[in-house]
Amino acid sequence: MGKVTDKDKGWRRLQELAKSLAADDVHVRVGVLDDGRAGSEIREDGITTGQLAVAMEFGTATTPARSWVGLTFDKARSEVQSDMQRLLGHIVDGKITVDKALNVLGAKYSAEVKNTVTQGEQIQPPNAPSTLARKQGKTRAGAANAVRTLIDTGRMIGAVTWATFGSGK
Image 1 (cartoon, rainbow, N blue to C red):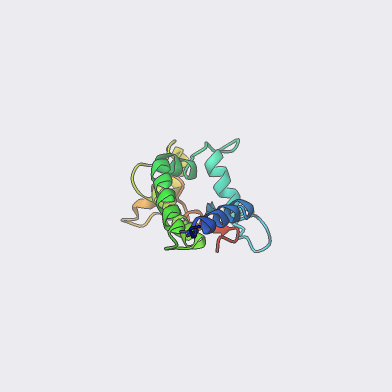
Image 2 (cartoon, rainbow, N blue to C red):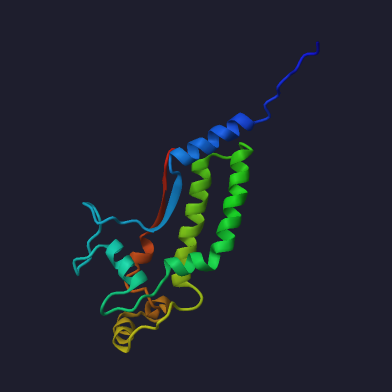
């Protein structure tokens, strides 16, 4: 009787990877990740940078919504999916770790969120005339970003970052 040889060409590793990813809820978050806990930066008006980011994204009773995080991902949806597919292929091939792939996505799309606010078309609706006048009063000659919507001190945009979750090693 002939001999049967079972050559595993990575199927077991792929199954283990899939189980690990599902069990560990591996993901990356992008945005202002201030959770309001101790150590969160509190502005002079008493709110944290994270609270300000949420107010700007969704609006308040006195401030219109200016979706900057959602707008970024709506515009980049197909690119995000393509990047995820490409990186997953590299993970399956053993070229990179899950953690590295998540950090690549986080770095790229945190930069994209910042670029949405600081470059190109302004986030709508435009600033109120009173806000525009206040910002222009603080502006140095040549400081073009000072009159853009969502930019005042720059702290909120500077706080955009990413964090990875799950083991993903």
